[in-house]
Length: 263
Image (cartoon, rainbow, N blue to C red; front, side):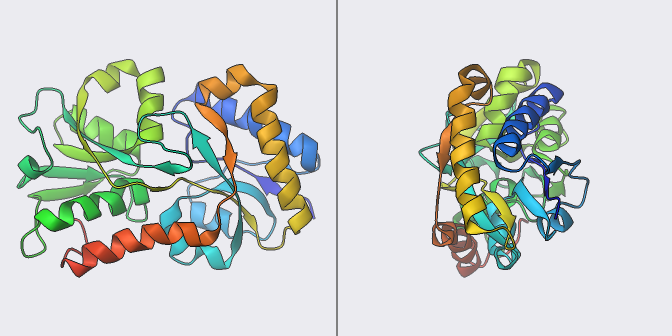
């Protein structure tokens, strides 16, 4: 079987996408030169469930919402970015630079933007942060899905929304590569932390290949320190699936407070 690979999650700019593709290419050359890098397309859930998947990256929320039955964990990136501690990450709460909001509490009745319904960093952790503040399951005046963290940032910057939760790694890349957009927003808080976005493989991939991938990933970081620095990448950790139960815990805590969805 000729396997496939794609890293779809942190391609914030074309330049960063090229860096991730180069790193992935080095890993495949070391482990499976016949594997090919593919365009992930719009249906990531279909990609992640492919039986010929050698390497991809997913969000912890879909992982814990059924995807774990189809895949196995390879490794979790260790990022050098504000909001990251070891393999954990969090989301930064942002508003417009000139907005009157200084805290999440002050955003009662404001307009929220989020990227996707199945996002931990854009939806789940924001829901968890808002849950203690909501009344009758309601906190915002309106909630809009934008399709991406960049979409949420632009919605806030362009005064189409007042607040969003942005993956802290994405936000660090925006500050690095899109400083004009970063200057149009400001931080007003942080969400709870949870394990970062893991690299995954299909359950059909043998354990020996998974171990070879782990070694090759860390070798790729060490071999190209300048590339690793541009990707804010310190290395990779191997986490058990049980660590990702933290994401489900955040969901359950919000639901226990009567706040099952952003509203």
